[in-house]
Length: 264
Image (cartoon, rainbow, N blue to C red):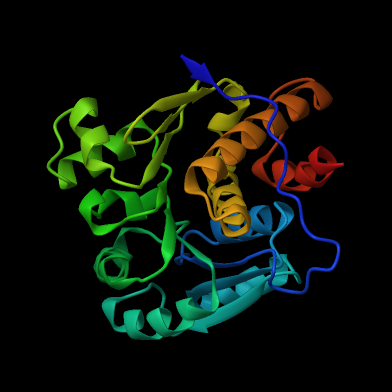
């Protein structure tokens, strides 16, 4: 078994300018789920990217504005995304290196997710409810971050019967299967990550992982390396907080704050 360990954060040049270290667009949010977007966007920023924009339904967007002054927020009419928003988002995506879609987006946005993922020209990170409605054949060079149930739905929607067939169909995509030991699956190999603990079953920790994936992917332009870095550091942050809090009282928002201390 191939376990990952001792990974270093991406380096940046001393003379780099705004945008040289990556730009990320995060698409998601719905009337019931606001915090997911903020957690994912802030995790991406903490990973080292220069710019993160949140694209969200209007009321969700204003709520995200109140949660953080560091995130740029574009607001779209309605309580949920629908297929009519795809044209505008396809135009907006051209400004970014990586697009993260799914955090808090809800199943009401299924038609939007299907149309956007099929038509997007960008490298994607796909998380949460977005994983439940797409086919693996629609994406390439993506990172997908399902837990086991979401993986089952992804495989069903893709007409994939088992793990062996899954690897054959992956092409250049990478899947992180979240669990007690994370599996990072490529078409050629499987890597394992042992960092993390039972406290990471709390809501929001997966949003932090997805944000880290997007942030590292924007910087490295390598989806396998980004997936390894995200899984390793997401779990390591949880382990540090478990000791610091002397138990499972830590929150996903604590994890976002801890990222800067990991870098130092």
